[in-house]
Length: 87
Image: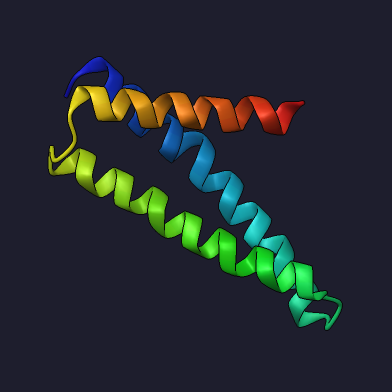
């Protein structure tokens, strides 16, 4: 696996998926406590969809169905999202 693909895999597995899962867990707690707003419900749907997209990224990486160029573009987009969330 190329370096860029490995970097993408690492950031998805170690950072993105755990953060999305943690956020979803918090949202589901609100839902269980019947404190979830409509915005929270929308966020749950969006985060569940995003989680599927992240899992699909891992799948195409494992099956080598993404070029280095495409992997780099996705990787850069994810790094941008991480930077935005810090700011």
